[in-house]
Image (cartoon, rainbow, N blue to C red):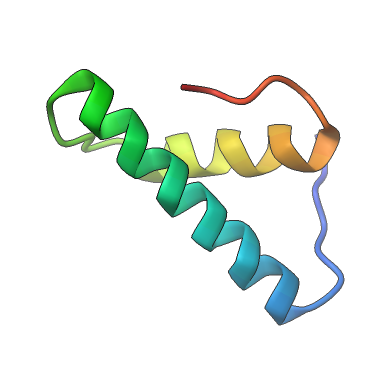
Length: 55
């Protein structure tokens, strides 16, 4: 699914939201996630599409 952002600021905010959510994800799993880029990408695409977000 193609995902676009209107501005650099919009993309930066999406990254911040993903980072915050990912921090909670790592707290739940109790370990660092070496595949965090994949998790961020999934989160951002789903968020943009209005779909269920990963936990």
